[in-house]
Image (cartoon, rainbow, N blue to C red; front, side, top):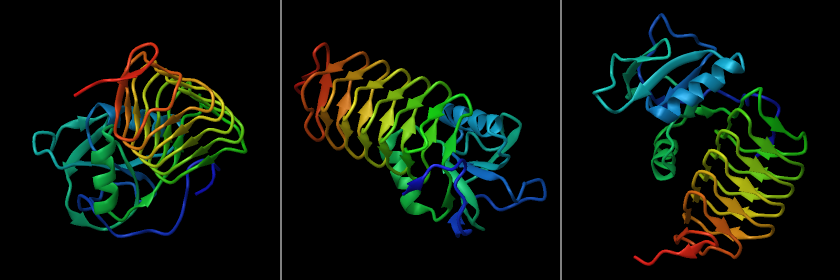
Length: 224
């Protein structure tokens, strides 16, 4: 994990991707996935001035369709390159990262604010209107979605997803793979466990254990 300096850049890596075509930009970023989340990833790349090399998906119903000016290709073994996973589902995003070997990029929308002291992991995206305050540490392949705020000294684990409008107070810990639903709030020093889920609009005033679903105000464990 390294401090954010814009779009991360390292050595090229081998991957399972659609084969390169003459139309691809060798300096661009390959987007894995062609669903709704990928649309926002592509728009964020465009806003940051980063070209899209290709958009690939394993859903044959999407092959040949248009993804904001780029034709969606089949996901298969081919050359490596710079990439980012445009999949909102945390478990599925982890599967793609484990299966592929790209040079994962960190992308921040120019309309987001990320303090210079913040550390952002590889493959993480920060969308428009988001704010990440001093001392925060954000892991690999995390989604800080539109308008989400992360206050000072928060720690966010790999593959977590903060949905639009999520607000984390200072010192919050979010475990690996946790999903915080749209508009949810986490009070200071609270821990959200690994692969836990916090419902839309919920307010966490106490810790949420690993793999628990918590909903409501205040957030309470939902019995299965």
